[in-house]
Amino acid sequence: MLDVRWGAASDVGRVRRGQEDDLIATGNLFAVADGMGGHLAGEVASQLAVDALRAISDAATLTVEAVTDAITRASDSIQVQANDPAGSRQGMGTTLVGLALVKDGSDDLWLIFNIGDSRLYRFADGELLQVTVDHSEIQELVESGTVSHDEARTHPQRNVITRALGSVPPPVADLWLIPPVFGERYVLCSDGLTGELRDEQIAEVLTATEDPQEAARLLTEGALEAGGRDNVSVIVVDVVAPSTVAEQSADETTVPRPAQDHLVRTVPAVAGPEAPVPATEIIGEVPG
Image 1 (cartoon, rainbow, N blue to C red):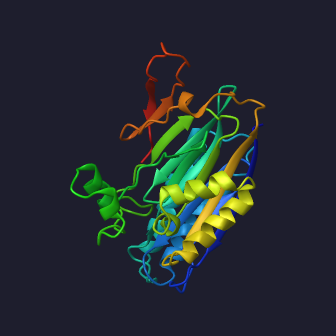
Image 2: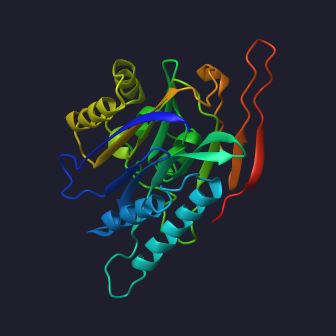
């Protein structure tokens, strides 16, 4: 079993009255959900997403299929409640970003999954990499060159997301499979963190703070000190023992953007000047 340490922190923020974030952090499954949809609805949506993952978290071995099935069940459950004529939760939904340790044959692999604009970062060898790609209107404007990264931080469309659990048709999750690396660190967070702190500020905290619980606390407090205009939730996960983990540098584990609607396996590069460009292998469609 992979040896990991983790810490988690969450706060309602300084402006919002209710907490619509939810999270789960266990030895093999970590996720943050950021709900939306009005009075109580966002809170319910994020809880349904986390509950669906919690239902599989006690399994001795997780698989890609178990995790993606849980995501599908979560989206279906949110839709059922949103369509209840006796309720007032129409239009509710939630983002979901997660990290799960899954088995692929005899190998332990990280499964990264994302729907919405909550993020997962990888921190290794002093470098912070945003692995997930935001499903948002502002991300599309940045990619088209219409808006710069600096302009995106204050753009009026920065909070409009293009995928969420509970939407119709059901959303497609971006998925990555990557091998664990001794010494790497992951950060999962709602946009209450990234809306307040820049990537370089997040990296400074991760560099200066060894304990993952303290790192999660300091990142959350940093978001509050910067304004705290939204709920903020942070999970920090460290790979602390190389039991089944390759001891390799950060640049030897390349994390590509996933092919749309497909699951992508990362093939680590071979170190050295003659190393080939890492390949990606499509291994199956993601369930909708």
